[in-house]
Image (cartoon, rainbow, N blue to C red; front, side, top):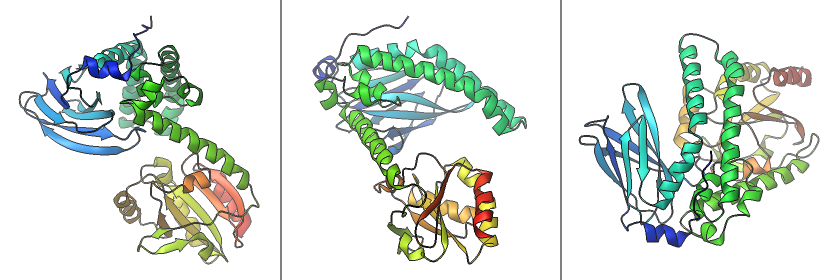
Length: 367
């Protein structure tokens, strides 16, 4: 049965918690080792801070100096491999992570109590997801085909994810004045209606950065949908200028006169990397007729450069920083996305994913 918790405004958070800003870790099954504290950005998609903390008899302290709440993932080495433990850091709150890596608890104030109680309502689904993931990993390591396993195990995993999201949505609707709702809001997909339900105290309080991250995501998605109207086949591809590998400006318009494939990719994207060998074949096959412009997405500059060197990717590349809105301009929703632009700068075709049909189309277009 899902427990409905008491509402918690920002003032209550600080009235209920002490004024320290430390995360104290006490793990009984670690010993004299070290942990890595990864503080995530409010959208939960990137690292804001990373720090290694030494442990003595399983105990160590991480100092949190932020002015707003953050989620942290604590990486701990265990005999079974590295594990990630979740902890919410709140300014003015001294947090304590105790127990074992297999069964731990974070305490500190009313928020942690309420969040822990909510997590208990989805623990069965999370255990089943973990079991599915372990089954997938074991079978892949035994030599079974990864793609086939994804088709078999993926639907069951996604069904559990839908059940978890449903419970998060139910909680937010029932507890709009509780900061736990802001912490859950950033974890759900369709949040446009939910964000309007949150109280002013939650929107403006210690968890306001999470709310702002969700609002940014909503605004970006609206802009992406609006951009799609101007990206139909036959429309002019929006021009842009980004830095190439040598640090020089490279404009899309400078490549007029050839067919150009805009390849939106990232070093983190398995399907992007998987498609590189075939892309190389076609780059060589249609040399003189075709140019490829790799547009990196969601990488650090180092990761981008390292991936190009590692995979020996021969075509032109530009670095697309996170501050850029190019993926919104081009309404990119998945990776890889390949957009074919004709010699006059008009969009010919857009293909999402690593699809053999893309290469068939290139043959028909360039033969």
